[in-house]
Amino acid sequence: MRIFDPHIHMTSRTTDDYQRMAEAGVRAVVEPAFWLGQPRTNPGSFTDYFDSLIGWEPFRAAQFGIRHHATIALNPKEANDPRCRPVLDLLPRYLAKDGVVAVGEIGYDSMTPAEDEVFTAQLALAIDHDLPALIHTPHRDKARGTARSLDVVKESGIAPGRVLLDHLNEVTVEAARDAGVWLGFSIYPDTKMSPERMVAILHRYGPERVLVNSAADWGRSDPLLTLRTAQAMLAGGFDADAVDLVFWRNPVEFYGQSKRLDLSALPETDATFAGNSILRGGS
Amino acid sequence: MSTLDSLRRELGDRIAGDLDRVAANPEAAATLFPAAGRRYGREPLVGDWTTDEAARAVLLSVLPPEHIHEIYRYGDTAEKLAVLKALPLLPIGDSAVPLLEDALRTNDTRLVAAALGGYADHLEPQAWRQAVLKCVFMGVPLACVHRLAERADPELGAMLRAFADERRAAGRDMPPDALALLEQLKEA
Image (cartoon, rainbow over all chains, first blue to last red):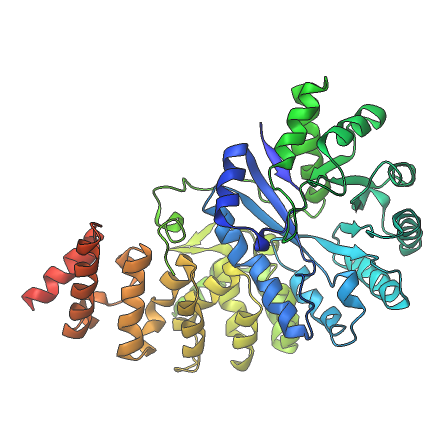
């Protein structure tokens, strides 16, 4: 089984996770820029983070034979801090990078006027840079946040086929489906979605345009819930082709719209010098 | 004919217009430089230069030198590697040594190796010895080190011997190329 985790925050994970993911069949990941738990207070803090998403993190992933790409954006929560707003001016530099396959995560956290502005500005950046957009739906007031996000998408002029609306659930999936965007689901140990609920949604709506991710980060989360959900799909009566559609071909098609996705095989990781540094503890 | 001239000639028309743009407006490099692989290609071009590396070298050659630091600062790994490879070709004296120091602070084996190319002639001996030892520590082959045999001195030999002692105490091997270097220093 080959797995593409289309939303995971590897910066917050250990090399043990990379090892376990590789063993579970994860061959590619996309890491969206997001908040880090501790709020940032200046643009430089973001640029060092973005540098890591296009530099150190792909290097780390490569040690385990995993292709790593990123999405770059000013996230909705920190968009509310005026000290972070100048990050918007720095984004074009990063949106020009080979490893950046979408603008994201953008969208709403608390649905403030500042979030409105930054969301709209970044959808315009996605259009300017010919990139798809990854949109986070809020944890609180989710149904209204989802409806409002879809309104903003419509107004922006970006094609719905170039939008992935993420963290959907039973309550929000239909509105997203009707709007023609790609449907993202995050599987969490306690919150968001569980493997069993995900399989029920797949039975009801089909696997087309559905992406399933672990959204693993610094909170309670598990990078192997992609595999668990794939196994639950098989146990629930889906065939291997449907699993491959959800866990590989759909994310490849969505992010492939950037024309920057590189899924070529990485060199063997246990013999070449490029594979040695982390495995040998070179710090 | 310099290497830069020959790279430029090999690239031909595909980059000529962009070079004029960057010469007229250095800010244009902020988007052209990262896009080099997508724009000009990544296939081998001439010698040990791929097309994107060569394109990046000639783009740097038409930029005012003070912009090189910013290109490096915002570069992804492939961009940084291309800058490090181009440095010995550019008329910039030792002004880009801070870029080597930046690369040598990283834990990315590719950047550390690239920092020890031709431009490392500008590194002070102390920094250069530390960099060579870091290569041994990280498992980077010493073949990447420019003028290694000439520059290796007794002080580097002492550092390598101490490291070999630690490895022996831990029951771990030294890389063969590091042992060969130690032999060479013993004979000198």
